[in-house]
Structure formats: structure tokens, C-alpha cells
Length: 635
Image 1: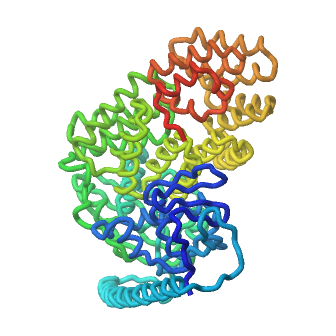
Image 2: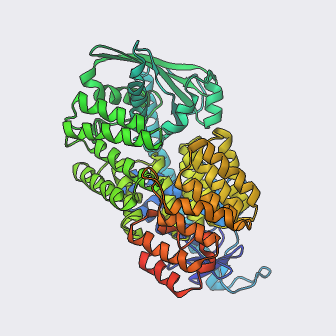
């Protein structure tokens, strides 16, 4: 018999209290922030505790029947967030049980809030009637499920017959379905080594095309590219990336012709499932990318419609497209030199094709990173990013890359958390596989004080881009801002196993050591960062903090003097200087510099609500006024 949910609008289970009207979830009096859809899902499951709620019922009651076809990612995300907040384990659930291919069941005992669990009570006539009613609902639910199953069975048989007819190369009988894959960098077979950008660019765009398949998890380019030339077998790569299949191939460009050869490999068995060659004129390379992706999707039982072809690239000339590929090639290096070079190529692309939305988005992304990493003054740089993002949006508002770029600059430059969140969510709906959207959204959640949501979102980015250095860095950063220093240090160390010389992680690891008063360990990591990336303002400010906090005030002041009188090649932000003055315990000077950082539109002032470096200022009125001026949401 199904468990009966109490009539009270506020119920309790396992130390949690849930207001079924508002969706507010609390533990020990503290509100645990759930987004609207996950909250609705939780309420629906709790109200039907002990009973299976099908995925179709959740789609209809939470998302609405008219959006049923688009609800899959939203539901999966909602379930992950609920489990994160409840600290539940999908393999050994205490609250939420998954019934594969059916739905979910809330299995914890649910009581009216404030009541104490007691033994079995006698059943009143009203309760008996309630049980009968519940039984009737359960029977109706069962009939509905049988009807849906019958329809799905007919559709499944039709789909099976279609795939058997159309697929010439098929997985072996009984093999598991392919729900995730990685596209390895296409090997450049051209005699010209300078064509490397072309093969990498085609790989990146092939990944983007395949990512349009809603229920297929596609690993991002930054993780796949790490296996370039590794010599690893497909089964090893599939295990490392946790995917079902691998796409590998070559690209050869000879004059005005392009030939792509691709093969699909089962990641568990190393079986070659399918292989084909595509030969086109270079002017048709955008159609070629779409055709290759569509054929791969078809071979594994998915479909990319023709309507998604060449989104953001209508009437793009071969020359503009080639400059775009070169821009992304240099942008992916994430160095100051690479970003500036990428901007040159993106600008060439938009000069040749002013309507090229993706090229404008590339400009926006480049300017954002230049400002974020302290390479250029933020005010002017973010403004350029916003101009480029708005132009891209005007040209095509259905690109996840465009919505993400505009969302991020809306957060960092406009300090509009609500507007940015709406755009991040829209980007994720447009492309659930776009790791950067999840990564940047997690930063918004973190700076809003929504720690558990931020962790859930960055974990999704990590699933899509498991070897991305910056994604793994942000995982540690969110733990750091949540004062979970040991967890952040552990994460930073894991990331450095991928690349021991990655400067952002070295800096963040050093900062985490500072918070734990491990000044010598911090100094070691700051010195490593200086050796790997040079004497940037971030490195020098970190070293100055370490000296100050360890008691070496003279050493700190010596570095501070260099920062206050930088060379023309070194941009120093008042944000960086404020951190040094905090370490020197000169709070008045630190606040003055923070005010200047706000005026100069430094993006990282959005961290003031959560960053532990400023904890000793939180009781001061002028600091509180600064937080209110920035508009940081109160968690």
C-alpha cells in the first residue's frame, strides 16, 4: 500500500521540512535553495510518497504538456539537484528511488511538520475512505501507465524496424545503447602542418553539431583534445571519459577539396560499428560538418534535423569561416597572446561577414577572459564584450554560445544576477551539452551564496568536460568560497595532476593554503605560478599576501611598491591591491580600493558576498553598503 502524505501543507522527513505550497525546503531552520522546477518535482514526489510517479506525469505536471519534448534535460537536472541538496545517493537511496524506464518514488517516511513518529494507529473511517481513494488513484495511474507502455511499444517497434532497414553497420546483438560519446581530434593528413587549426576547428564544430541531440551526452573539445596523439586504445579513452562510444577520424585538405573519414567505435568492446568517407568542396564545409554529425547520430539511434543546420552561420563565406576557425584555435590556448591573436581573426571574420553570429560571440568570449584574468582594464574590455554579445544575439538568439556570453557579461559587468540567470537557463535549454554554460552559471550561483546549487551545476560541467582544467579549477573554487578548504585543496591537487604548470590552479591552491594559515605551502605554490606564467599582477599580489600573513611585512611592502608603480606592460587592478592590504590588516585602505574596483567595473567584485578574504570586514557598515551597491543577492 502506498504511503499516505499528511494533510499538513508543511511536512517533515529525515530532518528536513518542506512547505508544499511554496516549495521551500529547510533543515535545522536554514533554507536550502532549490530552483523552481526542482522544488516542484520534489513537492510532487513527496505528495505521492511511496508511489511511483512516472516521467510523463512529472513532465505534464511540472513542465506542462506543451513542453513535453524538451523536458528531459530539465528533469534529469532537477533530480540531480534534489539529490545534492538531500545528500542522497542514487545507488543507495534514502529518499529518492529511481525505477529505470518508469519514474521515481519518494521512499522516506513523511509526517506533518512538528509531529513525533509513533507506532501504528487505528484507522478511522475517514482514513479508510482516504486509503480507498488513494487506491483508486493508484489503479488509474496503473491503467495510464499500461496505455503509455503500449503506445511506446508500438513506437519502439516502428523505430526498431526503421533502424534495421536503414543501418548497414549495426552494433552486435544485445550491446548496450549509446548514450554518450567523445569525438577525438581529427588527425590532420594535409601536407601543410599550418592546417592544424582547420582539423581542430572541424572537430570542435562536429562536437557542437552532435551536442544538439538532446539526450546524448557529448564530451567537450577541451577534454577530448587531451588524447590527441596519446596512442591510447578507444576502450581506455572511453573509460577515462566515461563514455559509451568514440568517434575518431582524419581530415585532409587538398586545394579546394576537403575529405573527412570518420569511424564509430564501441568504447566497451573496441568494436568498429561504422566508418565512412565524406568528400566536399571547401566552400561547402559547413554542410559537410552537419552531414557527418547527422550520419553519426543516425548510426547510434538519434536524429539531427535539417532545421538545425548552419545555425549562426547563414551565408558565411569560406574565408570568414576559416578566420573563425583560426580565432577559436588561438582562443583555446587561453593565454594573453592567444586571446589577442584570436581577436584578430574573429574581427577579420566579422569584417568579411558582418552577419556571422558565432564570430561576434568569439569576440565576446575573448574580451571576457582578457578582463577576468587581469590582462586588460575591465571597464573598457567588458564593454567591448557586451557590444559583441548583443550583436551576436541580434543576429541569432538561438545559439547557446551567444546566450552564455551575454549572460556572463551581464553578471560581471552589469551585476544583474536575475537577468544573467535567465540567460544561463535559456542557454542550457538550447544546448544542455555546452559545458561553459554550466560552468559560468555555477559562478553566478556561488556568488549568490547558493553553494549546493553551484556544486550541482559545476558537476554537470565536469561530466561534459571531465579533463578541462578551468572546469576542475572552478570545482575547487566553489569549495573554497564555501569555506571547505580541505575539499578545495584536494580538488586543486587532482587538477594539477592533469597539468602541473596550470597557473590559475596554482594560484587558487596557494590562496586556499593562506586561508588555512599554511603560509610556507602557499609561498611554494605562488613561486611555481611565477615560474610557469611570469610575474603577473595576480602572482605578485599573491606573494605579497603570503609574506604579510606570515609576518614578513617588509617583504610584502617591497612587492606592494612594485604593484603600485607597475610597468606599462603590467596591468594592476585595485581588486588585487585590496587583497594585499587585507593581508596587511589595513582595512580602510582595502575598502577604498574595493570602492575603486567597483567604479572601474572589475568583474570579481561580485565575489564580495562570499569571499573569505573579506570576512573581517563583514561587520563594517561601509563594506555592507558596498555589497548592497553591487546588488549581491542575499542567500
